[in-house]
Length: 399
Image 1 (cartoon, rainbow, N blue to C red):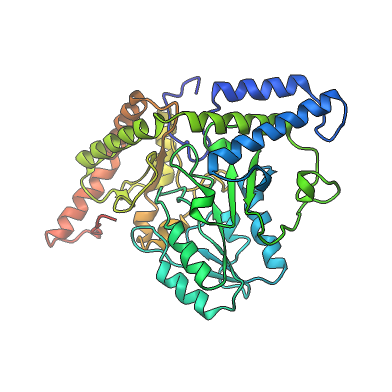
Image 2 (tube, one colour):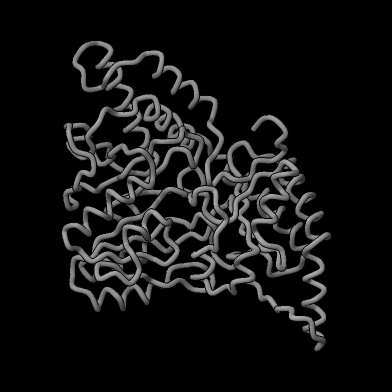
């Protein structure tokens, strides 16, 4: 990041493009060519697309034939779910899924069901089993690899086991996994998985849906051509796809970043706890992505924190970054049972391949300054209430 920014800590929204990815995109732009053309430039463009398809497949342990390129994770989610709903299949999703999944599986609608999560942020597999017992066979279950707000890793393998026993298939929003944790499509046993390049150093505007061989035929959302084996019409985004492939190769080769970033994340959380006490890191009782912290500053709204940090050159998010720039109440934290005032004071800090200790230092410096100015007043008020005095404070427990 350039300019006045000192610390970019919003990798779960979008990661900075890796240099090798930018070179791959530029090379494809310079070469041109339509991958559906049979002349030399067309064949070269097709070769770039297919090389990227193989790289993406290797990244997630899938067959290249199973990879369908899309405009991103949102399109991949919609391709997987809306087609199934149109064919009359019952759709079941966890309550913490991304909005692009929940919009395709509306809670309470006749065709959809919502599965709760525990206070630790992990999906309740027993509740899923009960719901699938109630439904006719053939339901489609959607559970993400890891949550974009809390980083909590979901028990996908357990979900698949339950789904198989009840005659259901499984879609997995895998957008937050690659580049952070190992994701293996075949070992997880899911039928469909959504991916997005820009979450781990690739370009924006390109993703993929991975569909298991033999799975129910996908229903194309875009019609008019035979691209992607008839599953998505339209000339492929060759530069974006080439960048996606380069990002996949880099993520596979980069075995150092996840552990290094986890060390940075853990140090950040230890320092925040030393400033504000226990209970401010949400989801820490569960297995999480190594790069993600969801941190509450009781008494200070997330919107205030995001703006104050931004003014001091630190970029973070409040919940998902896919809400037209709005800071709204997190459905994820509500599903975890957090009271509204605490959920409304939570921000997301997410690191990645270019993060350094100086970024963490800057965040902690600015966060502490804001806490001393605003958050500590609420902390004092809560301590007074816990001692028996009045003041309208609220007690908080670690989650």
